[in-house]
Image (cartoon, rainbow, N blue to C red; front, side, top):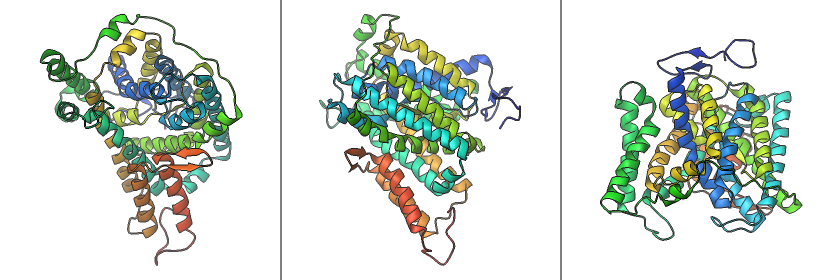
Length: 444
């Protein structure tokens, strides 16, 4: 970490190579990279509230505010963006008896549960901050954190493929145009990341997505070979306007259903921080407690005004993996832009015109890089896959995640991330009670 003795680092100017959290690029490049992170998070941050029946502009606004809260909590040392958590979707729909994708008449009940989850998350963060993070490392050694990171990427894979294929209720088989646009998207991203000159090489998601968007517009709107992009919503939306805030209502049943989501949020946050640590070559573990506190407080504040629960975003972690730029100042820019956009219904409407196959193609790249980061964690920590305990645990976690294995426990549904996380932890430590080979288990 930056040895400055201050709460925040002194960001050193650097213009080439990997840019670490306490380093910075010139102001112009920082602004453009911040915009790229906004684009990366936008699809999921809008999609999650739409599924739960929330106002997406409120979620966009509070994603920016939450990112600032997280930045302050970790002292500007951990590069991360906070956005709408998909882990809340199942419990929120169950607690409010709502239909996915339809207006939710009981949002207030969900907000009470979201605030409770945030409070529990922050309390756990306080405990970690004061008791130390070593016990988490013993609970979740590198073999497990790698498995969880991989499971996060894999459980998101069907979402990316469905979007890339143009699969919807009206088109259950998708379309060939969607698939070709998705292929063009990730090929463009890869080509820019590898072959583009100078600064453009650092913007593969932004430029690749823009090229694919333009191509789709020409093919669909110009030649009529696909569903045209509809700009009527953009024309009708005002430039500036207040989001629709909602006052929370606390219900014991809703709190009971929603609060256990914290288990998944901790696993996500831990996996993300471990992955970023592996990518930067720095241990960010000392900031785990403060990261949990920041995420918990952000979730409470978001829920207090009608926003979704927040979590560190895998999409933005994927962007960092591509660009090798981890400067935390980039996320200040991204947060500021998101806050401004939260008050601009017109821009929100414009972003929502991005065709599904373009988002799907970008998601394939980003989610794939998340899963691939697990390999880096295992290699750098010399995880021994000749050890049956490690091999079996990782294998089970990967399949639970990739298959999105769901399990109902006391009225609470764990999705693939939850079952992969909890299953891997329980299985790994259960197999550690005795030696399953002639050697001492590694990474125990």
